[in-house]
Length: 437
Image (cartoon, rainbow, N blue to C red; front, side, top):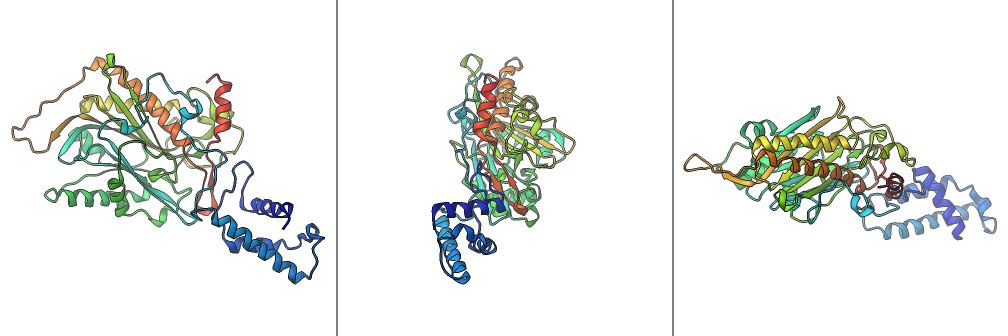
């Protein structure tokens, strides 16, 4: 088939499947049947094949043969026929395209795992045409059940669910992994954490897991209840130190933010030695905000972006997890959690009535056993006047984590053939440079 003809067929097919030249092939999981059916319906394009001879029957046979060849060549070059749409530009983190949030330096990985001992694990469910969901686990320490850590939780707006936060604020400590998933999978993930802890610590029969949710029903068949208890266990067991996978992964697989595809994002800050040298890490699951509200480093990006018009979305949520090695008490961690709202607000969202934002913070500095022989604990506590630098670090890391959740996310097509486009990085760079960033 001449190149012009095959290109024309692909172009016509792309129009029918919602593909645009700027985003590439948005739905690679197209079946051979659908492809062949389209060509059969459009077989009257004979004017492009005037040089071809033969009967109408032989013409159809040739076209269908071409369809088979093209489909085989197309799918054979792709390792997963249900893969996500191909991006026009590779996904990178905010700093990789010159976006510098704040003034404090980052940790080695610019991630929550820069706080020693903290691990992150994901289980991603990306199957068929409508399953776009998963689980993300943040592990504060290897033995969180018997070696507890000071913790605190803060509700910015409570139109959502985060189990275990009443226990955190009553006891003042963390004694469970922190799991992030979709709204209707809270029960399954909660069950998974219980099973994991009971199996590991059979003498303990009171477990109150920490599970926070965001709604991913726009892209995911959320009512299908595809997340299971085993997925939660796998996310915990998969958790590791080092770089954290971001974007459309784990609990963030089906999430969107400010009219763009989003998901999991993370960032960290390290204070100067004169201010303690403490490390603060933040991980977010981003799933809220309207396009026109989006601001990055003070730049009204949402109003300036002209491509890929936003599709109407329901109000969503943000889950924010903060880790630090600074020796903070429950009350001080509560103050840290409150400051995360400043970083969230810097990205533009007003935390609307339909949103559910929860912040969970913990410190790895003071470890105390649930079985004290003396009934007392000796702790180290930072002076309150040393908290201000930590507040700045949390604000910066929260904002950058949200931005990373968008720049690392990939364009995703899911339920009802709905597509949520990733933020175009080239255009983002152009807007930021126009404002001197």
